[in-house]
Image (cartoon, rainbow, N blue to C red; front, top):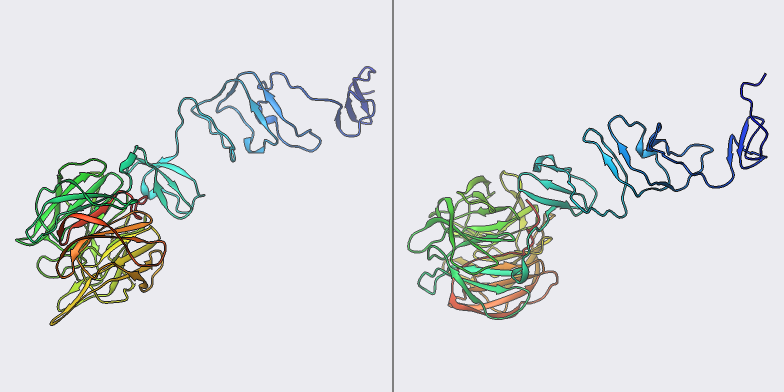
Length: 456
């Protein structure tokens, strides 16, 4: 006797253990002629019962009633195939975890939370575009395929692309800070004054702050001060470097400013750093491979800082060192510049580091250089010829964007107010940019758009 008795009908038919709905000739275990409409699908089985399986029809499922997915729901959501469109209200309780693949379009009308963690917990090789909140620095960051970079969370307006030059001697010491717009050409404008008048100043900055450290002539100083780059005004005290010194090389990422080499007097291998978003004294970072004065021959990518050239007792250096900015530790040899020189100036696109000018001074021989050369920051290697400046000189300030390096003032061996612009992504000679407020020597330079930004 049959276990199931079914009335005769063309609506539901059982033929040889094959069930047909809407057909008298079923060809599979379940053969449905027409569209399947599931009412109140959030019932006993839940949404997870919509999965691909042999004999089921893979099509779009519409859920129009309210759906509650809680930690009692079961079923691998990743097994859902086709498209599920939810037009009603969907609630996911706090004890539940829902994992989905890529979403083509997502619109959020209230708020949503991104993954978060400290710097050490970042995935080193995520998919490009991955976004998270960095708790160490209180900022969103994203992975561009090579490096983690910060997401700008403020309106920079017309100030973006601004370069600053602070201090110098004309020949008396000056505290003047001057500003330029790197993307255009023209004369420098008065910005404000440092807290102290010095030359041989170290300069570096991030998207919001310009920082100036140390200085010399008439006595060295350990003072660090800073300005808000987008506005004009006098500098504010930031903290102190480890000892009173000058001729320091400066570079920065978005969060950390690094100072390398100095004269105290005497050449030094000291590397120290500050957190630019906060104020406070410099902290030890590590040592250079060779004790020397770096002056302003330093630049950075978002991950790596590079320092080239400098003065060593009785000679000049062609050594290029590098560090990982987010870590602490001693510098590693990178390669050599094309010439031994000190008081050269440098800037970066983020990929390419460019050095300009400088001089060789081995008594009684003195030579000022017009040379421009470059290196690829991500790899080691020696400097490669790039072109020439409009004049032979040393002790210029430097400010760069991701494309252009602007050098300001210098020593030729007379003081000059000339400014050059160098298109760093292409080879070729420098072009005249304009004139500084005054002819002076050895200012510190920085910008809010250089190639080191976006890193930690």
